[in-house]
Image (cartoon, rainbow, N blue to C red; front, side, top):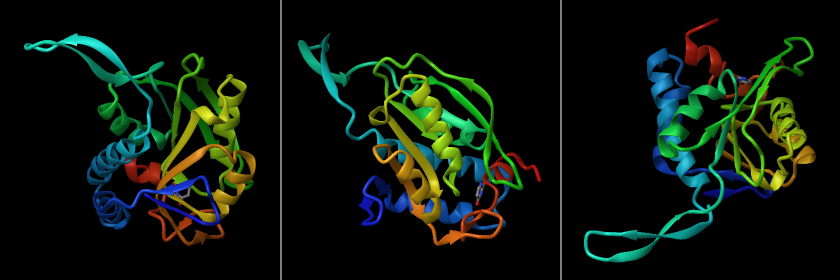
Length: 216
Ligand code: URA
C-alpha cells in the first residue's frame, strides 16, 4: 500500500494482482463480461486491504480438541454502500469477502452540462457506530464522492467511520474530496493523470457503468 505526499488520506493499493487486473480492465477490447468479472475480483482484493485494520475481539468457541478464545471482528456489521449504478459491480466483490455486511444504496446521476450529482435514491442501514465502505469505481471530479459522504454525514455517520473505495482516482477529484472530507480514507488502485474536458479520467478506462452493463 503506497501513500501520496499531496493527499495524506489516499492509499494506493499496489498489490501486483490488483495492478494486473486493472490493466486488463483498462484495455478497450475487454468484453462486458470480462470487465464485470475483473471488477468483482479486483474489489475483493481491494477489500482485503481496506479491512486489514478492523478491530478484533475474541469469542469463546470449542474446537474438536478444546475450548479457546478465538479472534472475531468486533462491533457492528460493516455496511457496503455502492454509489449507483457503477458502484454495484464493486459491492459484489466486497460481499464475497464479507457476506454478513449490510448494503445501502446512494443513487446519483451526473448532469452532463454542470457535471454535478443529482440524488434520486438513498436507502441506508442504521448508522450507530458501524463502518461504512462507500464504493464507486471512478473518483473523477470528486463531486459524487463528496455528495455520497455528505449523505452519510446527514444519516449520522461520522467521517471517521467512512472509507471510500475507488478503482481509479483523478488528482482534481482528490483535491475536491480532501477539502470536503479530509478525514475519510480513500483507497484506490491508481491515481491517474488528469481529467479531460468532459470530466473523464485520463488514461482511465472510459465510462465504468457503460463498460460494466454494456450500455452506451
Ligand atoms: N465516470 C466514469 O465512468 N469514467 C470516468 O472517467 C469519469 C467518470
